[in-house]
Image (cartoon, rainbow, N blue to C red; front, side, top):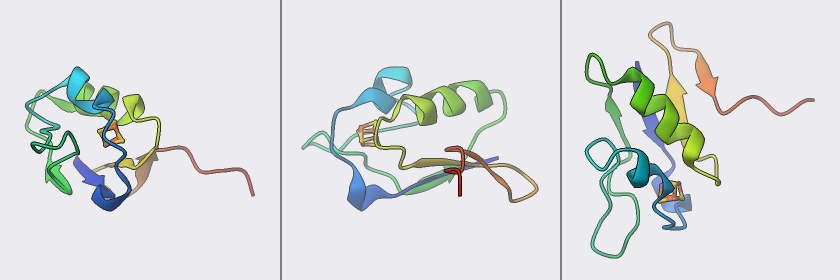
Length: 76
Ligand code: SF4
């Protein structure tokens, strides 16, 4: 499982870091400091919760088969 983040769209409200500072580090200005990472074994739930916590929905959860399970697709 992998997390991808549209770093440039971050508004710096730190909701992701409130879930896990380790997975979602912020820079000194309070914006997300990573554009993605492989989720360490056992931290999948935290990573999903962090992604869901982002009100901007710029944190994507990519499953091992390549599908994006978060955010949900907008209805067509
Ligand atoms: S929750 Fe989203 S907008 Fe807020 S700091 Fe994290 S990535 Fe940026």
